Image 1 (cartoon, one colour):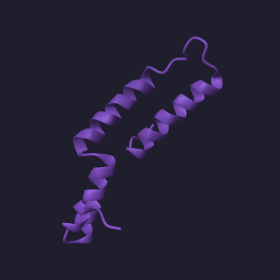
Image 2 (tube, rainbow, N blue to C red):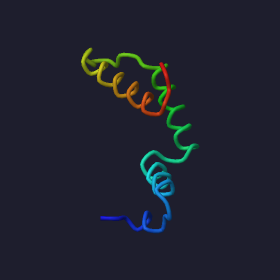
Image 3 (cartoon, one colour):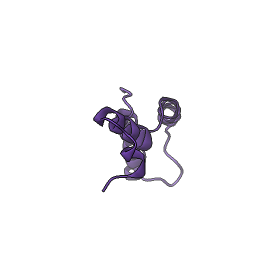
Image 4 (cartoon, rainbow, N blue to C red):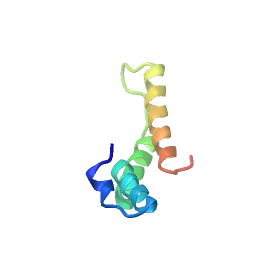
Length: 73
């Protein structure tokens, strides 16, 4: 099944670019997302009443998203 947007593309490269922007956002969106995640990473502190497991889950979530955006930690 093809999406409406990919049917207008004339090459595999155009389809790939369309899918990349659709699923990952534009360069500016990725940069802003990376900046937000870096801020969360740097400010990461255990919350009152939070378990170590919950903290680890939040930490892992942030790190995995940063790695997915190409940020090396």
